Amino acid sequence: MRLEILPVLGIGDVTEGDDLAALIATAAPWLRDQDVLVVTSKIVSKAEGRLVDVPADGPERLAARDEVLAAETARVVASRGATRIVQTHHGFVMASAGIDASNVDKTRLVLLPTDPDASARALRAALRERYDLDVAVIITDTMGRPWRNGLTDVALGVAGMAAIRDHRGEVDPYGNELQLTQMAVVDELAGAGELIKGKCDQVPVAVVRGYLGVTHGDDGAGARALVRDAAQDLFSLGTAEARAAGLSDAATLADGPGPTPADPAAIQRAIDAVASVVAPGTVFTLVDEAEVRAGLVAEVPGWPDDATALLLGSPPAPVEPYDLVRFGADLHRLRSALAVEGIPSVLLPPPAGSPASAALAL
Image 1 (tube, one colour):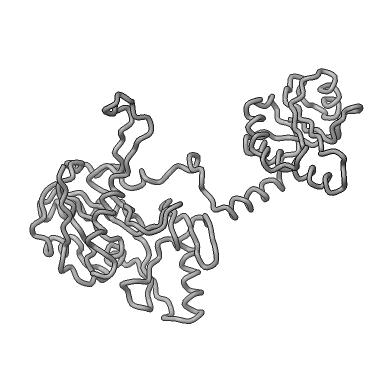
Image 2: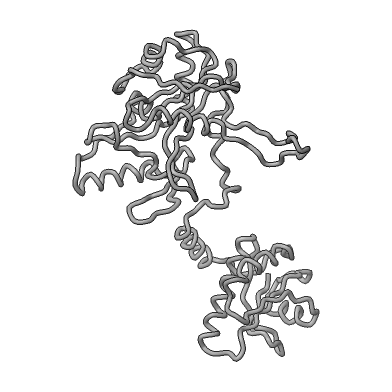
Protein backbone atom coordinates (compact mmCIF):
# COMPACT_ATOMS: atom_id res chain seq x y z
CA MET A 1 0.00 0.00 0.00
CA ARG A 2 1.41 3.37 -1.05
CA LEU A 3 -0.37 6.41 0.41
CA GLU A 4 -0.40 10.02 -0.76
CA ILE A 5 -1.78 12.90 1.34
CA LEU A 6 -2.95 15.82 -0.78
CA PRO A 7 -4.27 19.24 0.34
CA VAL A 8 -7.47 20.65 -1.12
CA LEU A 9 -6.66 24.33 -1.60
CA GLY A 10 -8.94 27.26 -2.33
CA ILE A 11 -12.10 26.31 -0.44
CA GLY A 12 -12.12 29.62 1.42
CA ASP A 13 -14.42 30.65 4.25
CA VAL A 14 -17.52 28.49 4.67
CA THR A 15 -20.81 30.00 5.79
CA GLU A 16 -24.23 28.63 6.70
CA GLY A 17 -25.99 27.00 3.77
CA ASP A 18 -22.86 26.53 1.65
CA ASP A 19 -22.75 23.44 -0.59
CA LEU A 20 -19.71 21.51 0.64
CA ALA A 21 -19.86 18.97 -2.16
CA ALA A 22 -19.68 21.77 -4.76
CA LEU A 23 -16.92 23.61 -2.90
CA ILE A 24 -14.78 20.46 -2.63
CA ALA A 25 -15.40 19.22 -6.16
CA THR A 26 -14.58 22.66 -7.59
CA ALA A 27 -11.40 23.02 -5.53
CA ALA A 28 -10.26 19.44 -6.28
CA PRO A 29 -11.29 18.47 -9.82
CA TRP A 30 -8.53 15.86 -9.63
CA LEU A 31 -10.49 13.71 -7.14
CA ARG A 32 -10.64 10.00 -8.00
CA ASP A 33 -12.74 7.05 -7.02
CA GLN A 34 -11.40 5.36 -3.87
CA ASP A 35 -9.93 8.58 -2.50
CA VAL A 36 -10.57 9.29 1.19
CA LEU A 37 -11.75 12.83 1.95
CA VAL A 38 -10.62 14.03 5.37
CA VAL A 39 -12.86 16.97 6.25
CA THR A 40 -12.49 19.23 9.27
CA SER A 41 -15.75 19.19 11.25
CA LYS A 42 -15.70 22.97 11.59
CA ILE A 43 -16.63 23.60 7.95
CA VAL A 44 -19.36 20.97 8.23
CA SER A 45 -20.72 22.73 11.32
CA LYS A 46 -20.56 26.14 9.62
CA ALA A 47 -22.37 24.88 6.53
CA GLU A 48 -25.02 23.24 8.73
CA GLY A 49 -25.48 26.37 10.88
CA ARG A 50 -24.11 24.85 14.09
CA LEU A 51 -23.01 28.21 15.51
CA VAL A 52 -24.17 30.19 18.53
CA ASP A 53 -23.86 33.91 19.27
CA VAL A 54 -21.99 34.94 22.43
CA PRO A 55 -20.55 38.20 23.78
CA ALA A 56 -17.09 39.00 22.42
CA ASP A 57 -15.40 39.09 25.84
CA GLY A 58 -15.82 39.59 29.57
CA PRO A 59 -17.65 37.52 32.19
CA GLU A 60 -20.78 37.50 30.02
CA ARG A 61 -18.89 35.52 27.37
CA LEU A 62 -17.70 32.98 29.96
CA ALA A 63 -21.22 32.60 31.32
CA ALA A 64 -22.64 32.11 27.82
CA ARG A 65 -19.98 29.56 26.98
CA ASP A 66 -20.73 27.63 30.17
CA GLU A 67 -24.40 27.57 29.25
CA VAL A 68 -23.61 26.25 25.78
CA LEU A 69 -21.26 23.63 27.24
CA ALA A 70 -23.97 22.41 29.62
CA ALA A 71 -26.38 21.98 26.71
CA GLU A 72 -23.83 19.96 24.71
CA THR A 73 -22.87 17.74 27.68
CA ALA A 74 -24.38 14.34 28.40
CA ARG A 75 -22.22 13.86 31.51
CA VAL A 76 -19.13 15.37 33.09
CA VAL A 77 -16.22 12.95 33.04
CA ALA A 78 -13.63 15.09 34.83
CA SER A 79 -12.97 18.70 35.72
CA ARG A 80 -9.92 20.55 36.97
CA GLY A 81 -9.92 24.32 37.22
CA ALA A 82 -11.49 25.73 34.08
CA THR A 83 -10.98 22.50 32.14
CA ARG A 84 -14.01 20.28 31.58
CA ILE A 85 -13.75 16.83 30.03
CA VAL A 86 -17.26 15.76 29.11
CA GLN A 87 -19.14 13.15 27.15
CA THR A 88 -21.18 14.68 24.37
CA HIS A 89 -24.60 13.51 23.28
CA HIS A 90 -22.82 11.70 20.43
CA GLY A 91 -20.92 9.61 23.01
CA PHE A 92 -17.53 11.27 22.40
CA VAL A 93 -15.38 12.10 25.44
CA MET A 94 -13.51 15.34 24.81
CA ALA A 95 -12.59 18.71 26.25
CA SER A 96 -15.37 21.30 26.29
CA ALA A 97 -17.67 19.09 24.17
CA GLY A 98 -15.70 20.09 21.08
CA ILE A 99 -16.93 23.71 21.29
CA ASP A 100 -14.48 25.85 19.30
CA ALA A 101 -13.79 29.57 19.13
CA SER A 102 -10.97 29.50 16.54
CA ASN A 103 -11.35 30.43 12.87
CA VAL A 104 -14.69 32.08 13.58
CA ASP A 105 -15.86 35.58 14.46
CA LYS A 106 -15.21 36.54 18.11
CA THR A 107 -18.94 36.76 18.78
CA ARG A 108 -19.65 33.17 17.74
CA LEU A 109 -18.86 29.65 18.88
CA VAL A 110 -18.82 26.59 16.64
CA LEU A 111 -20.48 23.39 17.89
CA LEU A 112 -19.89 19.89 16.58
CA PRO A 113 -22.24 18.65 13.86
CA THR A 114 -25.43 17.21 15.33
CA ASP A 115 -24.83 13.83 13.63
CA PRO A 116 -21.34 13.61 12.08
CA ASP A 117 -22.03 10.17 10.56
CA ALA A 118 -25.12 11.53 8.82
CA SER A 119 -23.12 14.53 7.61
CA ALA A 120 -20.44 12.22 6.18
CA ARG A 121 -23.09 10.11 4.43
CA ALA A 122 -24.76 13.18 2.95
CA LEU A 123 -21.50 14.60 1.60
CA ARG A 124 -20.50 11.25 0.12
CA ALA A 125 -23.91 10.82 -1.51
CA ALA A 126 -23.76 14.32 -3.05
CA LEU A 127 -20.33 13.68 -4.53
CA ARG A 128 -21.49 10.33 -5.93
CA GLU A 129 -24.80 11.53 -7.37
CA ARG A 130 -23.69 14.88 -8.78
CA TYR A 131 -20.04 14.28 -9.64
CA ASP A 132 -19.95 10.51 -10.17
CA LEU A 133 -17.25 10.10 -7.51
CA ASP A 134 -17.05 7.04 -5.26
CA VAL A 135 -15.04 8.29 -2.30
CA ALA A 136 -15.00 7.72 1.45
CA VAL A 137 -15.56 10.66 3.81
CA ILE A 138 -14.08 11.15 7.28
CA ILE A 139 -15.21 14.12 9.37
CA THR A 140 -12.60 14.99 11.97
CA ASP A 141 -11.94 17.07 15.05
CA THR A 142 -9.00 17.54 17.37
CA MET A 143 -8.84 15.67 20.66
CA GLY A 144 -6.43 15.13 23.50
CA ARG A 145 -5.62 11.58 24.59
CA PRO A 146 -5.51 10.02 28.07
CA TRP A 147 -1.99 9.44 29.39
CA ARG A 148 -0.31 11.32 26.50
CA ASN A 149 0.54 14.96 25.84
CA GLY A 150 -0.36 16.60 22.57
CA LEU A 151 -3.43 16.66 20.35
CA THR A 152 -4.35 14.74 17.22
CA ASP A 153 -7.26 14.70 14.81
CA VAL A 154 -9.70 11.80 15.16
CA ALA A 155 -12.79 10.70 13.28
CA LEU A 156 -16.21 11.94 14.39
CA GLY A 157 -18.13 10.81 11.32
CA VAL A 158 -17.38 8.23 8.62
CA ALA A 159 -19.04 7.05 5.42
CA GLY A 160 -17.74 4.71 2.74
CA MET A 161 -15.36 2.61 4.84
CA ALA A 162 -15.15 0.67 8.07
CA ALA A 163 -14.05 2.68 11.10
CA ILE A 164 -12.14 -0.28 12.55
CA ARG A 165 -9.99 -2.91 10.88
CA ASP A 166 -10.42 -6.10 12.89
CA HIS A 167 -7.38 -8.39 12.95
CA ARG A 168 -8.79 -10.82 15.50
CA GLY A 169 -8.42 -14.39 14.34
CA GLU A 170 -5.56 -13.58 11.99
CA VAL A 171 -2.19 -15.26 12.51
CA ASP A 172 1.01 -13.24 12.78
CA PRO A 173 4.31 -14.29 11.09
CA TYR A 174 5.28 -16.18 14.28
CA GLY A 175 2.13 -18.32 14.24
CA ASN A 176 0.34 -16.45 17.04
CA GLU A 177 -3.38 -15.92 16.62
CA LEU A 178 -4.33 -12.28 17.26
CA GLN A 179 -6.90 -12.02 20.04
CA LEU A 180 -7.48 -8.31 20.67
CA THR A 181 -6.07 -6.27 17.79
CA GLN A 182 -8.62 -3.85 16.32
CA MET A 183 -7.10 -0.86 14.54
CA ALA A 184 -8.98 2.46 14.48
CA VAL A 185 -7.94 3.10 10.87
CA VAL A 186 -10.18 6.15 10.43
CA ASP A 187 -8.46 7.85 13.38
CA GLU A 188 -5.10 7.07 11.78
CA LEU A 189 -6.24 8.54 8.46
CA ALA A 190 -7.68 11.57 10.27
CA GLY A 191 -4.30 12.18 11.91
CA ALA A 192 -2.54 11.74 8.58
CA GLY A 193 -4.79 14.33 6.94
CA GLU A 194 -4.20 16.81 9.76
CA LEU A 195 -0.48 16.82 8.96
CA ILE A 196 -1.15 18.93 5.87
CA LYS A 197 -4.33 20.69 7.00
CA GLY A 198 -2.82 22.38 10.05
CA LYS A 199 -4.66 24.77 12.34
CA CYS A 200 -3.76 28.15 10.83
CA ASP A 201 -3.31 27.34 7.13
CA GLN A 202 -7.02 27.40 6.20
CA VAL A 203 -6.84 24.02 4.52
CA PRO A 204 -9.94 22.28 5.92
CA VAL A 205 -9.90 19.28 3.59
CA ALA A 206 -7.22 16.73 2.73
CA VAL A 207 -7.30 13.70 0.47
CA VAL A 208 -5.64 10.40 1.35
CA ARG A 209 -5.03 8.43 -1.83
CA GLY A 210 -4.10 4.76 -2.05
CA TYR A 211 -5.87 3.38 1.02
CA LEU A 212 -7.42 0.06 0.08
CA GLY A 213 -10.29 0.01 2.58
CA VAL A 214 -12.83 2.17 0.69
CA THR A 215 -16.13 0.37 0.08
CA HIS A 216 -18.30 0.46 -3.03
CA GLY A 217 -21.78 1.80 -2.36
CA ASP A 218 -22.05 0.85 1.32
CA ASP A 219 -21.65 3.72 3.78
CA GLY A 220 -20.65 1.42 6.65
CA ALA A 221 -21.50 1.63 10.35
CA GLY A 222 -19.91 5.06 10.85
CA ALA A 223 -17.73 6.44 13.62
CA ARG A 224 -20.13 5.34 16.35
CA ALA A 225 -18.30 2.01 16.21
CA LEU A 226 -15.39 3.80 17.88
CA VAL A 227 -17.33 4.76 21.01
CA ARG A 228 -16.42 2.30 23.74
CA ASP A 229 -19.35 0.62 25.46
CA ALA A 230 -19.76 1.91 29.02
CA ALA A 231 -19.64 -1.63 30.44
CA GLN A 232 -16.14 -2.07 28.98
CA ASP A 233 -14.82 1.37 29.92
CA LEU A 234 -12.39 0.97 32.82
CA PHE A 235 -11.75 4.73 33.01
CA SER A 236 -15.19 6.25 32.58
CA LEU A 237 -14.63 8.95 35.21
CA GLY A 238 -11.82 11.17 36.40
CA THR A 239 -10.30 10.43 39.80
CA ALA A 240 -12.22 13.06 41.77
CA GLU A 241 -15.49 12.25 40.01
CA ALA A 242 -15.09 8.50 40.58
CA ARG A 243 -14.38 9.10 44.28
CA ALA A 244 -17.45 11.33 44.63
CA ALA A 245 -19.61 8.75 42.85
CA GLY A 246 -18.26 6.01 45.09
CA LEU A 247 -19.00 7.97 48.24
CA SER A 248 -22.50 8.69 46.98
CA ASP A 249 -23.13 5.04 46.23
CA ALA A 250 -21.65 3.96 49.55
CA ALA A 251 -24.03 6.28 51.40
CA THR A 252 -26.97 4.37 49.98
CA LEU A 253 -25.79 0.79 50.32
CA ALA A 254 -28.52 -1.84 50.56
CA ASP A 255 -28.85 -2.77 54.22
CA GLY A 256 -29.50 -6.49 54.04
CA PRO A 257 -28.09 -9.73 52.70
CA GLY A 258 -28.74 -10.86 49.17
CA PRO A 259 -31.54 -13.30 48.27
CA THR A 260 -29.05 -15.90 47.03
CA PRO A 261 -25.61 -16.98 48.25
CA ALA A 262 -22.84 -14.66 47.09
CA ASP A 263 -20.10 -15.93 44.79
CA PRO A 264 -16.99 -16.61 46.92
CA ALA A 265 -14.75 -15.45 44.05
CA ALA A 266 -16.60 -12.11 43.94
CA ILE A 267 -16.24 -11.76 47.71
CA GLN A 268 -12.51 -12.35 47.42
CA ARG A 269 -12.23 -9.73 44.67
CA ALA A 270 -13.89 -7.21 47.00
CA ILE A 271 -11.51 -8.09 49.83
CA ASP A 272 -8.52 -7.80 47.51
CA ALA A 273 -9.76 -4.43 46.25
CA VAL A 274 -9.53 -2.85 49.70
CA ALA A 275 -6.58 -4.82 51.06
CA SER A 276 -4.05 -2.11 50.24
CA VAL A 277 -5.93 0.73 51.97
CA VAL A 278 -7.22 -0.78 55.22
CA ALA A 279 -5.58 -0.02 58.54
CA PRO A 280 -2.68 -2.28 59.51
CA GLY A 281 -4.06 -5.22 61.43
CA THR A 282 -7.56 -5.16 59.97
CA VAL A 283 -8.46 -8.67 58.81
CA PHE A 284 -11.49 -9.85 56.86
CA THR A 285 -12.13 -13.58 56.90
CA LEU A 286 -14.64 -15.85 55.22
CA VAL A 287 -16.27 -17.91 57.95
CA ASP A 288 -17.33 -21.52 57.50
CA GLU A 289 -17.76 -22.68 61.11
CA ALA A 290 -21.33 -23.90 61.61
CA GLU A 291 -21.71 -22.44 65.10
CA VAL A 292 -20.57 -18.98 64.01
CA ARG A 293 -22.86 -19.12 61.01
CA ALA A 294 -25.76 -20.15 63.23
CA GLY A 295 -25.13 -17.21 65.54
CA LEU A 296 -25.21 -14.78 62.65
CA VAL A 297 -28.22 -16.36 60.97
CA ALA A 298 -30.16 -15.84 64.18
CA GLU A 299 -29.46 -12.09 63.95
CA VAL A 300 -30.98 -11.70 60.46
CA PRO A 301 -34.63 -12.69 60.04
CA GLY A 302 -35.23 -14.42 56.75
CA TRP A 303 -31.59 -14.87 55.95
CA PRO A 304 -31.22 -18.05 53.82
CA ASP A 305 -29.82 -21.02 55.68
CA ASP A 306 -27.63 -21.99 52.73
CA ALA A 307 -25.81 -18.64 52.61
CA THR A 308 -22.07 -19.20 52.59
CA ALA A 309 -20.75 -15.64 52.70
CA LEU A 310 -19.90 -14.56 56.23
CA LEU A 311 -17.21 -11.99 56.94
CA LEU A 312 -15.74 -11.13 60.31
CA GLY A 313 -13.54 -8.08 60.78
CA SER A 314 -10.80 -7.86 63.38
CA PRO A 315 -9.41 -4.41 64.28
CA PRO A 316 -5.77 -3.75 65.09
CA ALA A 317 -4.68 -4.57 68.63
CA PRO A 318 -4.45 -2.93 71.07
CA VAL A 319 -7.67 -1.12 70.20
CA GLU A 320 -7.55 2.65 70.55
CA PRO A 321 -10.41 5.06 69.74
CA TYR A 322 -8.64 6.15 66.57
CA ASP A 323 -8.23 2.51 65.55
CA LEU A 324 -11.95 1.93 65.92
CA VAL A 325 -12.68 4.88 63.66
CA ARG A 326 -10.28 3.49 61.07
CA PHE A 327 -11.83 0.04 61.43
CA GLY A 328 -15.29 1.46 60.84
CA ALA A 329 -14.02 3.13 57.69
CA ASP A 330 -12.45 -0.16 56.59
CA LEU A 331 -15.75 -1.97 56.98
CA HIS A 332 -17.46 0.72 54.93
CA ARG A 333 -14.84 0.40 52.21
CA LEU A 334 -15.41 -3.34 52.14
CA ARG A 335 -19.18 -2.94 51.88
CA SER A 336 -18.66 -0.51 48.99
CA ALA A 337 -16.35 -2.97 47.25
CA LEU A 338 -18.91 -5.74 47.75
CA ALA A 339 -21.61 -3.48 46.29
CA VAL A 340 -19.45 -2.97 43.20
CA GLU A 341 -19.51 -6.76 42.80
CA GLY A 342 -23.29 -6.70 43.15
CA ILE A 343 -23.27 -8.17 46.66
CA PRO A 344 -25.54 -6.46 49.25
CA SER A 345 -24.64 -6.77 52.91
CA VAL A 346 -25.75 -5.94 56.43
CA LEU A 347 -23.47 -4.96 59.32
CA LEU A 348 -24.01 -7.01 62.49
CA PRO A 349 -22.47 -7.27 65.95
CA PRO A 350 -20.21 -10.32 66.22
CA PRO A 351 -21.66 -13.47 67.74
CA ALA A 352 -21.05 -14.08 71.44
CA GLY A 353 -17.57 -15.39 72.17
CA SER A 354 -16.12 -14.22 68.86
CA PRO A 355 -12.82 -12.29 69.00
CA ALA A 356 -13.98 -10.14 66.08
CA SER A 357 -15.40 -6.64 66.45
CA ALA A 358 -18.03 -6.77 63.69
CA ALA A 359 -19.60 -9.10 61.15
CA LEU A 360 -21.11 -8.77 57.71
CA ALA A 361 -23.94 -10.97 56.50
CA LEU A 362 -24.08 -11.26 52.72
